[in-house]
Image (cartoon, rainbow, N blue to C red; front, side, top):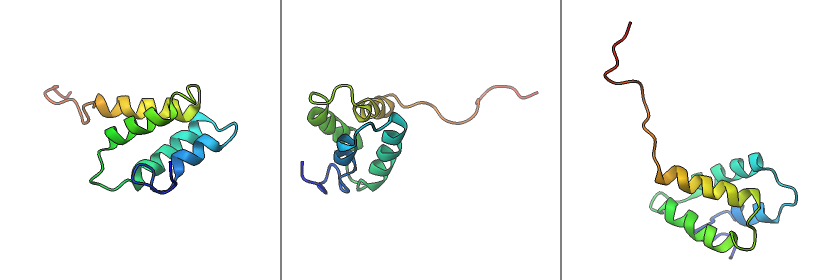
Length: 90
C-alpha cells in the first residue's frame, strides 16, 4: 500500500503495523485519527474490510488488526443512543 492513498490518507494504519510493541490503546487512538481523516464520501465499513483483507493474514495477532475488527463490528451493529423513551419518570 502506498502511504497516502484513499484507504489510509495519512498512512496511519500502515505506520501502526510498523511500530514494534504498540499497544491496543495506542492502536485505538490511531484508528480514531484515521477514521476522522477519511473523506465523508468514503464507505468506512468497506474501507475497514479492505484494510483487514490486506493486513489480517500477515498480522493476525497485531493489536491494530483487533481494533479494525472491533471497528467493523461496531459499524455493522449500531446501538441505540439516547435515553429510555417511553419509560416513566419518577
